[in-house]
Length: 282
Length: 260
Ligand SMILES: Nc1ncnc2c1ncn2[C@@H]1O[C@H](COP(=O)(O)OP(=O)(O)OP(=O)(O)O)[C@@H](O)[C@H]1O
Ligand SMILES: [Mg+2]
Image 1 (cartoon, rainbow over the protein chains, first blue to last red):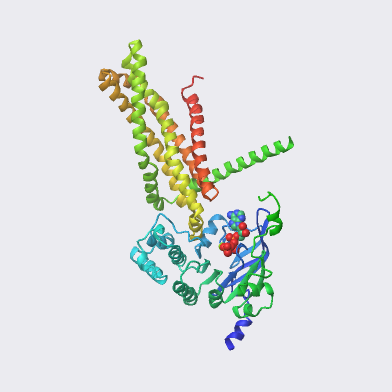
Image 2: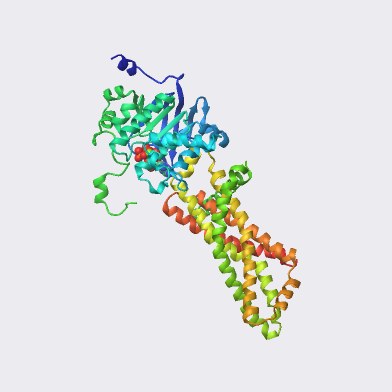
C-alpha cells in the first residue's frame, strides 16, 4: 500500500532527470514522426517507451544518441544539448551510453568474445586478462559464456540479441538504451533478461530506457512509462497508473486489444475502396 | 521546358551535394586526427584484403598481357627487321600505360567492388551505427584504413604488373621466338628513362589508386542500406572508377608526355 501510494505520485522531476526532451519535432520526408514531444528520462530508473509499431520509438533512441538530428526542439543530457554538439563532443558523450540495437548489429568480422570486448578495448587501457574476466562475466549474465568462440553468423537471432545486450552493458554505461530486448527470446531467457535489466539498474544505478512490446514484462520492471502514438506522448506514468488510466487508447494498448482508437494499420486509403478501385496501387 | 531545366538543376545540385559529401568523408577520415597505433593492425588487415588478395589476378593478367605484347610486337617489328626492339616496346607500353591503367581497372573490379559491398552491408546491418553509439568514429575505424590500404596497394600492384608483364614478354620473345636475350634487355635498358617512364607510370598508379578507393569507399558509405541499394552502389563503383581511370589517364598522359 505504502509503496503503491509513493509510486502513484511519482513524476520525474528536473533534479533527477538525466535526459530531457523538450518540444522536439522530427520528420522523415513529409511525414511528421514527432510533433512537439516532451519527456523526461529519470536518472537511475528504468523508463519504458511503448507504442504501436512504426510510431518512432527506435527513432527516438537514435535522436537521443545523436545519430539523427531533430528539426526543432532540444534533447538535453544533463544540460548538454545533444543536437548542438560537434562530432567530436558527440563521440565523447556516447561513451556514456550503451545501446542495444533492434537488429543486434554485432560486428560480423569478430567473434562473440571480441564483440563484447570491443567497447572495453576502445575506451579503456585495461590489461587483457581483466578484459577477459569482464567479458566472461557479462556473457555469463546473459547465459552465453559457452558461446565466446562463435562468430555472429553462427548465432540464433535470440542469442545474437543477448550478445548485443552484453556488449551494450560491457562498459557499465550511465545510460543504457534497449531496443526490444525481449524479442525472439524463449520464456526462460526472457525471465532472465527482465531480471538482468532490473538488477543492473539497481546494482549499478544506471538509467535504462527500454523500448518493448512485451507489455507485462515491461510493466513489471519499468519505474516510469511513456506511451507514444501519432508523434505525441499520449500517456505517461507509473505502471500502476497506466493500468488504471481510463483513456480508451491507452487501455487498448495496455490490454493488447486489436480494435480501438489506436490504428493497427499504417495510414492508408479506405480498404474496401482501394480493393474495388482499379490500378493506382502505388 | 521549365520542368526539364528544373530537373537538370535538381540533378546538378544533388550531384554536387554528393561530391561535397564524398570530399567531407575523405577529409574526415584521412586528414583529421590520425591515430597511428590503433590504425596499424587495421591497416595491415586491409592491405591484406585489398592488396594481397588482388595479387593473383594482377600477376596472371600481367603475365598474359606481357606475352600478348611480346607476340604482337614481334610480328609487327619483324617486318622491319627490328625485332630486337620488342623489349623496348613492351617496357614502354607497360610502364607508361598498360600497367597503371589495367591494374586500376582490375583493382576497381576486384577490390573496389568488395570495399563498397562490405561497407554497404555494414551500414545496412547497423554495424556503422552501433560503432557510432559505442563512441568510435566509423570514418576513422572503418573508412580510413581501407582508404590508406588502397592508396598503398595500387602503386605496388601496378609495379608488380609491369614487372610480370615484361617477364612474360621476355618468355615469349626470347624463349619461343628466339630473339637474342642480350638485345632484348639492352634495348630496354637504353630506352627506358627512370623519371620519364617509371616515375610517371607510378604517379599515374598513385592517382588511380586514390580515385578508385575514394569512389569505392564513398559509394559504400553513402549507399541506400538495402540489398538493392548495395548492388547499385557496387555497380556504380566499378563504372565510375573505370570511367574516372580512363579519363584521368588521358589527362595525365597529355600532361606528362604531350609536347606542348
Ligand atoms: N530510414 C528511414 N527513412 C524513412 N523513413 C523511416 C526510416 N526509418 C524509419 N522510418 C519511418 O519512421 C517511422 C518510425 O520508425 P521507427 O523505426 O522509429 O518505429 P518503431 O516505433 O521503432 O517501430 P517498431 O516497434 O516496429 O520497431 C516509421 O513509420 C518508418 O516508416
Ligand atoms: Mg523499432
